[in-house]
Length: 171
Image (tube, rainbow, N blue to C red; front, side, top):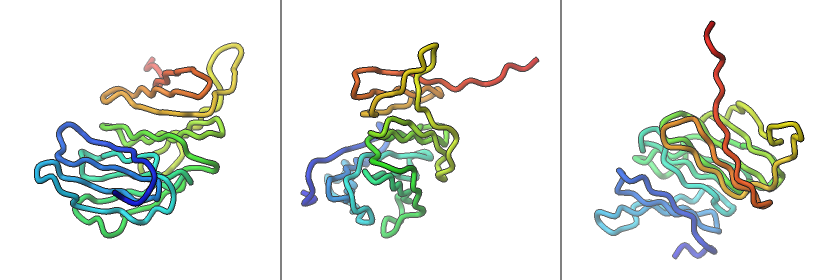
């Protein structure tokens, strides 16, 4: 028990570690091989909306409701490696790509921000493609395809959108 409300978790199938983020901003890491908590992350002050492994399971990303994202070296959990501020307004969803250094952040304020793992903004999605160009709804969930550059987004207006990377064709 972390003392906080609710939990959000993450596990990579090849990793023996399970990470849970709690409503009080704490994150706990369990090693399923020994059935024991092996680390507690205490630098966040708000609800964790993301715990995800990146860089071949060497780093852990945690993201809070305030839009603060921290990167952790799994070998040294006392302090985070870096902190990124990914946006204004409440961050309600986040996803990290498993093989490409990409991060997607979604907000109740109706936008999705694509970032590098260092926190540099690559693009912001505010509208659906097409002739009407309707504004996207408040973002509830995000997920990357494990191998392809494809992002799925679910919004509270009951729509699911799929976004892909478009590369210019060589002539």
